[in-house]
Image 1 (cartoon, rainbow, N blue to C red):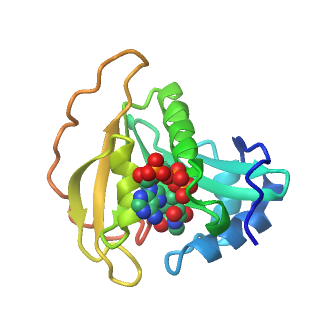
Image 2 (image 1 turned 180 degrees about the vertical axis):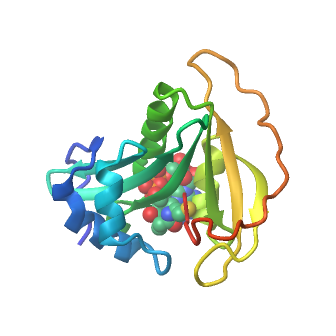
Length: 183
Ligand SMILES: CC(C)(COP(=O)(O)OP(=O)(O)OC[C@H]1O[C@@H](n2cnc3c(N)ncnc32)[C@H](O)[C@@H]1OP(=O)(O)O)[C@@H](O)C(=O)NCCC(=O)NCCS
């Protein structure tokens, strides 16, 4: 059943009570690389992560998970998903813009993410919102799929965007967090 389109949609920080719905959306939206209940519990309460929820009166419609690292001026979009029945209504766009505002407020100068090379819908979303491809990571995902790396400079409102800096593709570090769709 699709979500009624007339209900107002609100974006807010996720709380522990959202965990069951966050996990259910995670399972529905992704076939691999699922965030575990433990990881969600940690990210919802951690100062170095932010989990945003898009909700209406019927419950959770979408979510975005972003990470911040101490001493780094890059934020990393780790995961974004919108429930099947609510897609095509600008919810991911709204979540991503909220993630960008939050990262900017924390002093981040850019937002980075990885996306499966076989996910044209998500690639279109990021490119439409001004993200530029700057690298690739072979075999990044649990099922062996390759990732593109994207980034967007986060400028203060009113400052014109210039082309992002180009960095070489980075090989996967041993022990680096694997298989994340980021986007
Ligand atoms: C990708 C995803 C998050 C998009 O969510 P959404 O709420 O439907 O996206 P929006 O409505 O905000 O779309 C914004 C723009 O992104 C692009 N876009 C989004 N989904 C698209 C699709 N399936 N095909 C082509 N373009 C798409 C469009 O340009 C769209 O703008 P438009 O409608 O004005 O053309 C959603 O399809 C999803 O959850 N997919 C499964 C999980 C996933 O792949 N997450 C991303 C991992 S990197």
